[in-house]
Length: 262
Image (cartoon, rainbow, N blue to C red; front, side):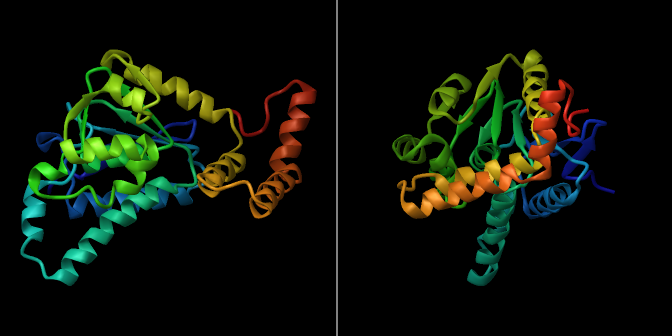
């Protein structure tokens, strides 16, 4: 029986770690991994016991992107089959980007092409100093299509124009400068750096975090109009009346932990 393409483990805090598990080919993904990862993310999203999802890779790499053998097979697909296959990857990226739980990319090594796209879809990214990044598609005659909305959102259009076209490799330090990753740590300290961020995420109320995450998407690049003001006013009015807010404020005044903190 073949090894699973992903591994999922959870701890007592409600932190799920999802590990891409094809280390011999640098965690490159094919249709099987895409299906397994999409299914796992949807399951974790529906599980109320899960508070935070950490995404990482096994072995030396985070992910090299698409498996070249898989992409070679797709060249022989019909147009309809090729489009349906591409939509599966697009659905995976959207599922990760819109997950109702906080997500953290623990980038343990190289993140290329679609692997870099996965990093951009996570809420927070922590990279090993040794990690290398690349939007490599054009060197294979391909385009960074399904990942493009998330990469552009992470690094901006100007940087995307450079790296989409040159396919240059860049360091973790440059990735941090571009806004692709939030923190950089030596590989030996990567897990500890990730755990510090996870600890901060566990301090927040789950419903408030999910609404805050959606709020970013709702207000990004939009002018402050009456419509947007009404949306944000509605969001805070709903939050003030929520069970979480009542508990959070009561805990603050009682000088105790709120119920969501373990």
